[in-house]
Length: 495
Picture 1: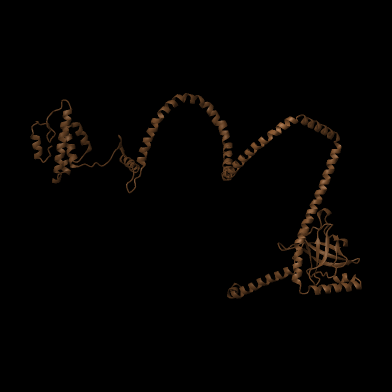
Picture 2: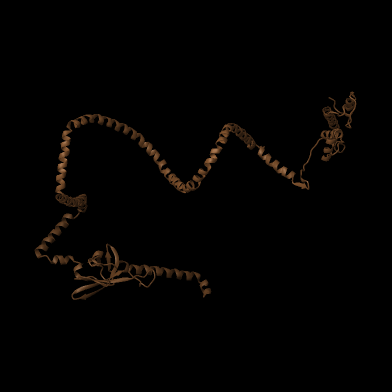
């Protein structure tokens, strides 16, 4: 089977597409033919409730032709069947479940939907206050009206009236022939009148309601006054006494009224000043309004913060303040001394700030600042002291020296035993090992001369030490000028 399907794939797909189109077209046709599936079919199933209506005549009502039951233009069901009982037509109405709410004051009218008398039932479900009709109930003939054809109306007229009506219709047809635009314009002119008349009717209805309410309130007022005649008599007497007091104070009232113009002038000036203030304050307040709106969120956050910190202030800061009071009192003299020292500290920290800025300054270009090289120095120091023995860390490093310096080390060691011991511990190379080249002879001679002068100065400052010039071997000699000559003979420099 699978092989045949793969072999005829195109034919199989074409058959599937045709079947799908057939299902869609059939479903569309059935939906327009008001085909309803039973309620037990999921999703698309429909459930109906049967009601009945009695009509004096059910002409043109044909079950099975899609004649519907409508409420306010919405289809809620269809006509199921028609039976005759005691000379009255009983029309079955199949109402959908979700619209199955028909009350006892409901009305039903048979009306044609088209000129071919395709009938529908216009149903007014009624009001819930009258009570609901049980399912399967019947509307009586008194609450239904059949369709009335024009020939039935004309049949009720006598021959003369029908003739006059015929003349009237013919004359109207001749008069309106070719005047459709004029008739339309004339009818449009009546449209504003109808709108105004509707507004007048609404206002008259409100006026009538207001009049009724005013009459009722006046009646309540008169009844209340009639029940309180004693209080009214007392109020009249009290008013008489008040007016009598006013009469005795006529002169005072006159003087008061004479002061009233000045007070009114002052009030007028104050109002003018207030108007100028409000004219300036209005734009200012309008500009401050966004700030006020933005402050609302801040105030809400501040309120939440205050509510959250209130327990901290009450339970922690207040006891701490009480306990810290004596300590603060004891610290007051120290604080006074610190206040006197503060200006000097200010200067100290200013200098320290300048020093820190100098250390942290990174100059432009490839050269780095002090902190960069300080970090490198820290790294190199840790690397230099990374070795140790039983005596502790051992500093290691590389000592660079010139022939001039090596010569000074050897001559100083010969002339001073203590320095000689330290120099021996350096394990420095010998001059003969590294300075045998002829180019280094001048540096060796200069080193010897510097060493001799250093030893002479040291012995001159040391009591009891031998005096006199020092030879190349570090020994004292006589002071004649032979050393200088000898030094010059060896290529040294005499100064």
